[in-house]
Length: 246
Figure 1 (spheres, one colour):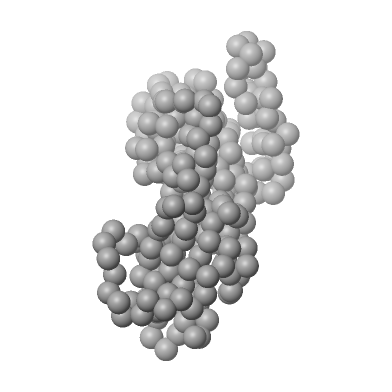
Figure 2 (tube, rainbow, N blue to C red):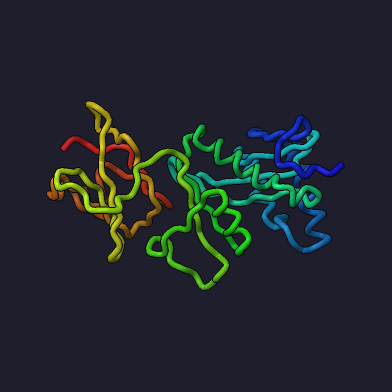
């Protein structure tokens, strides 16, 4: 029976805690595909097995059998890297991969994951990710590689502070992230009677970036991101949830 709709019916289920039986079935069809085509993700079966062990996998089940999966690695607090997305050969080209990735992006904030990144290795995958709201990480943060069809992309999954696109008021409290000659700016706003930010600052970064905290054009703190206080959650992303009292 053909299933062309991306909408789940009673025969399909997305499972956040899959069983050993799901893994065994997936391992079997990945192996069969590799033997037939020398393509697919069977070469990554140990990564997939590890994701099942750590429960960092969502499985798409059809009639109780795992016919698709997506794995991820929690790269640091509040962020993750999506590793592998695959659908059984007989179920491809039915938008099930799109649906499964959308389910994962909805699932992440429930687990305290606010931002995700992934590597796209073809023009098709880049287009696929763009359609789901992913953005290419700026080259100043993630240097371009020699592969024209490869790109590292990201998506922030919760409401967050926007980058300032014009000059801020001289009375504003501002956080800047700088790398080489590029400067990103955010206006800092706090919850009432709190140092918690109304909207968190979340943006791709690396350990060579600097943070500059200003109030009324006066520098409060200027440090490499590794030494900024309070400690910034950073790996692929800088994630700033609060700032201390001045």
